[in-house]
Every structure is written in structure tokens, then in C-alpha cells.
Length: 405
Image (cartoon, rainbow, N blue to C red; front, side, top):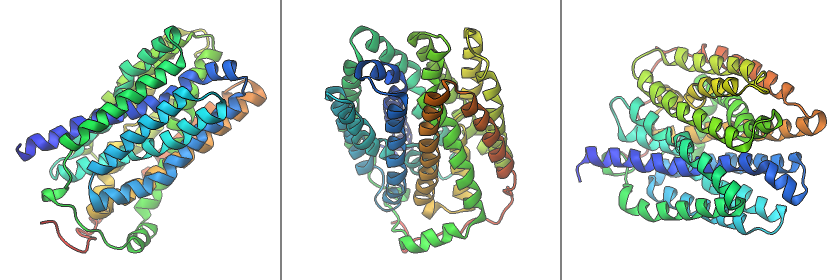
């Protein structure tokens, strides 16, 4: 097969893998009220499981990124999908809340950390040397696009066959996709071989001295708070508290995911053509303002869907833009590690927010503080990103110890 076909095939496989992994993660928000009723547990405990999931992903992310720098994507994606399958299978069979959280929040979370946006963005960006924004946007859009169909389908399975059947279906899908990875994903990177990176200590020291990296890290930490932390975990429970049935909240989440796909692809396309710090900062600020709508959705279904559309467009649209900035301002040969560390910060922010939002709900039976703080933090992240110069000196061309063959 020619290289062009191989590259776009990688985009397709990456899209499918992220679709399944993202839908599995989002299932926690869907089953949260069901687990509370069936096992007699608090929202704080289930939120704690969501927080542990994100913390495990934060730990895995830098290692997964470093593995991409050194080994390429094939083994990482295959192993990650296998772990997602194992985690979902353990969750489906768990007889107690602690065992189901073990399957979802530990085993499954390691798989989520490997089959993740930062891995896909790095691999696709390095495969497409010229104008990587659009292919990165398409590939990473899989992290939410699949949820347009999968999350509503899981809601139907949940209502008709129970939550265990829903998780069993996720396990079978992840395992089936893992079996296809060796045939469809190349083992090598640029030029068919992977570059041997510089020593880890050297790369980490370089990141610590980079003002661009520090700005991106803080902003992406906040990104985790305002997306994976409070929306992925708490949007559907909040919708239920506002009086919406599971099918309506799941459909709204599917709409959010559909527009998330549009936003990621559009942001990827724009990142090749406009001022990227201005684009990234604007995404954060508009996302923050959308929380004003969310605070007023009670009893208003059209308003819930309006929030889903606006937030969806500016949700994970940060990923292709940030990957583009990392590639040019920090460096291609350290991109896997850089995106991994940034993703760890994202997951850490999300973990803190997921637990805090659940705890605040248990205390006050309201989400007002959660949405208000998210609004302020997102605007602050946007203003911070505006300090990055688009015309900054380019990153070093090579931080590796040998060139690809």
C-alpha cells in the first residue's frame, strides 16, 4: 500500500479507537444514578471512581507519550484497546461497587490513558509533515464523534437490558478493534522508522525551561477541569437533577459529541491558516461563556440542546490547535512526551474537578458553584494563552540521538 493510503488508514483506525475509548469513559456519567440506586452508594463515591480514572490516566499519559517517541503507535494502541476491553468486562461482571470501580477506574483507565488524544495527535502530526492540522483534527474528533451514536445506544441498552449488558458490549467492541490494529496501523514513524529520542532527563529539563510549555500546561489543566472533569462526569447527572429523563440527557450528550467532532475538525483546519494562540484562547473563552447557558437549563429542553451545540463546538477543539503549537514551538522529536505531560495535567485537573463537583452536590444538592468556577477558569485560560507569540522562534529541529532511516 502507498504511503498516502497508509497515512489516511491510520487516521481512520485512530478515529475508531478514540470513539470507542471515549464512549466507554462517558458511560460512567450515564450509569451514575443507576449505580447509586442499585448499590446504595453516594454520588461522592462514584465521583471518586471517576476521579481515580482520571488520575490513572494522568500517570499513564507521559509514559504513553514517551513510548510513541521511542516505539511508534502499533503496540501501544493494541495493548490499550485490550486493557479497555478487560476493564469493561470486569466492570460488567463486578458484584460490588468496589470491584466495578476496580475494573473501570484502574484496569480500564490504563487503557484510556493509552488510547488517548495526545497519543493520536502526536502520531498523526508526525505522519503528515505538511499541514497536519486537518488530519489531526479528524483523527482526534473520534474521541467524541463516536458518542453521537454509541452513548444514546448505550442508554437504550441500559434501559432495555441493564447496565451490565452495556459494558459487555463495550468490552467486545474494544477487543475486536484491538485484533485489527496489527494489520492496519504501521509500526514505524517518519520515513517508516522511529527516531531514537534524546535521554528523558534532557527532554524534561527542556520542557521545564519552556515558557510556552508552562502556559500550555496551566491552560490544559484548566481545560481538564472544564471538560472531562465537570461535563463528562456530571452533565448527565445534572440533567437528571434538572428533571430530564436518561434518554433526553443521553441524546443531548450525543449532540454535544457531534458538534465536538465539527469543532475539532474545524479547529484543525484553522490551525494551519490562522494565528493559533488567538484561536486557542478564543476557544477557551467561548467555552467558558457557555456555562451561563448551562446554569439555566432546568425544565427547558431546547436550552439544554443549545448548550450542547455551543459547548460541543468549543469542547475538545483545543487538541489539534495545541498539538500544532507544540509541534512548532517545542519540537517534533519531543512531541510525544510533551503531549503526554500536557495530557497528564489535563487529567489531573479533571480528576480534582470530578470529585469536587460530586462532593459539592452531596453537600448542597446543587451544581451552581461547579458551573460558576468553571466559567471563570476557562476565561482565565484563554487570557493566559493570548501571551504566546505566534511568531516565536521555531523549536529545535532535532532532539534525537539519530535520524530516521
